[in-house]
Image (cartoon, rainbow, N blue to C red):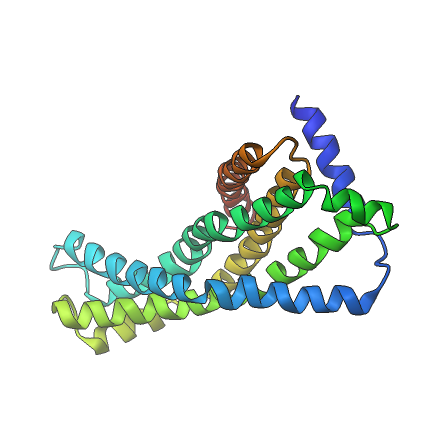
Length: 244
């Protein structure tokens, strides 16, 4: 069963990356999906990011009770944790629930209402037309969302540390600048691009091969979120093992 779905998934990707019939139509779809995925997810990403940084700072300050360890270490831990793990992974898990389920339900509804069959009868590459714009939009907008998330998480940690009195603003900033390695941003963006690809294609796969009625569309959306989250976590470990 696993190899059946794997083979069908690979064949779907092959058809997705075939030459578009009309570049102008695809471009309009890409712009529309960029607005849906990027702008539509901005609010929830901002809220999550601020609290991720704030909670990380407060909990790190609570655990560092030793007088030997300088307080600026809190800023360094918050910086590395949010950039390397919290912003890319936690945000992508949330986006899998919002964006992934939306992609699966949208394509699944088109499948059960025979709109995809109508596209194929008209000679349109349905998989490419429906999935490729979403994939390009996700690979374009989600890394931008993660960059915003990184910035807001660090800002949230700054505000939380100052308001709680755990450390002064100057100590937090000193921790942000301490032992800075730009490579962690590269790793985070590589993880983000891989996560975005997994979420979009897995969700689209679940929706594209939906059969039945409205109940099956709901099941496909649930499977899309569950499988995307599991594969994102697996990919997170693999990338960390290879690059760090």
